[in-house]
View (cartoon, rainbow over the protein chains, first blue to last red):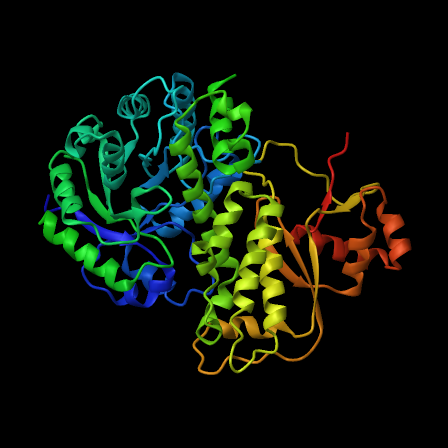
Length: 263
Length: 257
């Protein structure tokens, strides 16, 4: 566990603080750097950067423009791996778009689509591909299998890495009324390369907890400690918060608390 | 229906409040209605939070003199009242939400007054409205024709021309830097064109007389010769202007048969 790198997301409004921060091993990049970002050169020089942008949804094949964009960002960041999500958030014709991660139906058809398109993307990248789990707030009755089964079959068919988002697992367990550690045990943890840890707060629309740019609770840190002991291939843990409302204090303290919890 | 088609229905139900209330959706009983409604409302607030933070960032920078943070509207009853009619990504919904933001920020009455405040809010509102609409997520190979002989350019729906009393482009960058007194804008009329690319990128440029003429005339039926004659432009000037407008996303050359 001592080899685990502990990092955060690059939040441009916190560029000054991140450029000078201590105790952060890497930064995940959710957006390309802005041309007018004064801190970007220092950030790029100083940190290991992880590509974690929206590249496209793998329910459809990525077009050449998206693949070239992914390759170009991967080269710019010199990223050790490229991350994408198990998501299907816009309609095929582009008319409706949720602008927020949303999982696909867990069916054979979607499994075949994601496997085929991930294999194509993997072959076009110079770095390993890792895929992140996405929480569902409700079940769609048409789904044919549980999410962990679908994910296991996906990873067996593609041999890409697993970016395990722990708060996503915790939230699903909460809304299913099961113990998070039990639910976690269903996932293919032997594939995990990177782990996300984050805070959750009560959301008034959802009338329950959801991911927020807040510090992880003690319960979430204990869950992370439990999880990493079951992920033998994990190389990095990232505090997953990317929001204009995130403060430097929350980011820096969260990274420090994760480091202490996993030490 | 394929699974992909069903997924599209679920996405539409989350994005389109009137559809969510329709018999077409409810009769399918694909998911728990209460959970879907809660998640849809969460998504709507997130969707417009991101857009308000991005497009009203100059008003946010002025919040310490106006006393009004633009995104605060999302926590108010006026926004909650819109939720049953919102369709995420449509121009009508963008207009409705941006209108609420403008009304809220205007109610702040900054002291001392900011002369270009009205212009600034119109600019930010236009940016948010122009950004709305379906977008191309992936190229399918049905590209558009270039400006060749016989091509008929067309002004893209939703492109906006904005006449302002103050030269906003001169003051916008200053608003985002540290300041003690609100930066001033030159009292100099400017006309801006706001357009969106097929992939959803919004861009702004100063509009020349040639641009305004082409915007008026490019209806998809006139050839380049027609446009040059009616706008009184030399061919080279027309080509250069059209190239700029195409890059901006304001003009397209439709796919021929």
